[in-house]
Image (cartoon, rainbow, N blue to C red; front, top):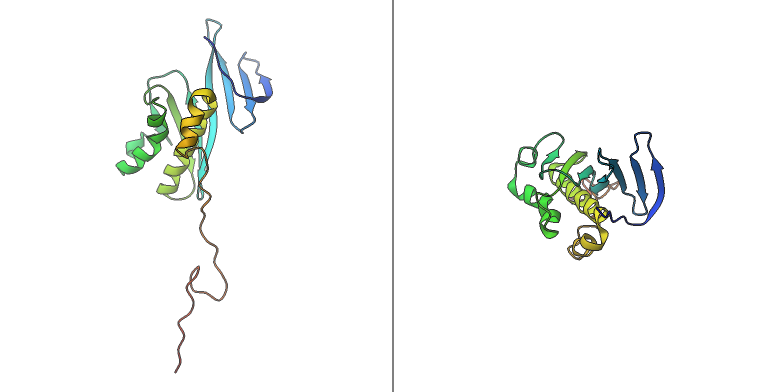
Length: 169
């Protein structure tokens, strides 16, 4: 099996024979040693949106199971639109059902968490096989973190931009 690996700036070998590759993009790839002497990839990536962070672990073997904080996506995100939102990178790359995904997400609200999971899955796919998956994910705008954040509270205001009501009398 020919394993494609993007630019690696550091490599570490574990006592078990497994290897960890640290990529330039910030992701990590673990080459897990199997009994027959071959290696299989596990990709670790992080995604973010608003105040949410998602840690994604993508295994190249499996039957397409996805777990978010120990639950299935339909149980964790009750809204079917959010489930479709997080599966978008897999649908664009036509890899739905090929990989097992274990995701830990924390912080923010449910919509921000869905965006973080989507960004993390897209980055993991791009690190797994950059020659094939990076361009369609980049064209769809899934690799870029959404920079919008909550606006800060200003002094002399009741809300972010709303001022006190002026009373003439």
